[in-house]
Length: 226
Image (cartoon, rainbow, N blue to C red; front, side, top):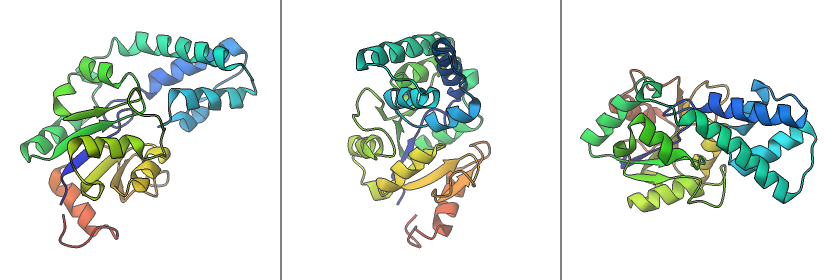
């Protein structure tokens, strides 16, 4: 039985990747190196601290922990100036309708995001009330692909992992869902998210019936258990 759906935030519910990229790119330029969109793909689904470490690895830069803390804070301050201006128009197509359908069918929902700004973003786009539980970067100690964020979401919902479906757009997130022993729907391109049970381009036109149908067809999902 599907009892709960757990959603990543960036790239699944709303596209904030562009704002992250602008902020990280600005920091890289300040440090004297180029940060590309391709580089930015490595930062998807990981924590702010880990993202900074990857950035500095790309730029071949080394700094003290105190300096790195200041850099991460500087990047976040710039990022927040962008997300503070977000509106419901930035919700990705089909997301709100799908969340409404889940609520109508009494399926529990949780947000599982590494972002420490997740509550603010949900408030700005008007979706806070659609989630029974919010687990963000402020309440976890391990980043994806560690399954902590999803397991904590399931625990707060009172649902066993095997009855949860995760929606993720990042490789690390898909791996985290698998590590949590949960089913996973990839959002994006199949070639990038091969470990997901199945992949959709987005939520536009996606329904609970389609979710059940695809999971029933999945080689991992016991027949007749959806």
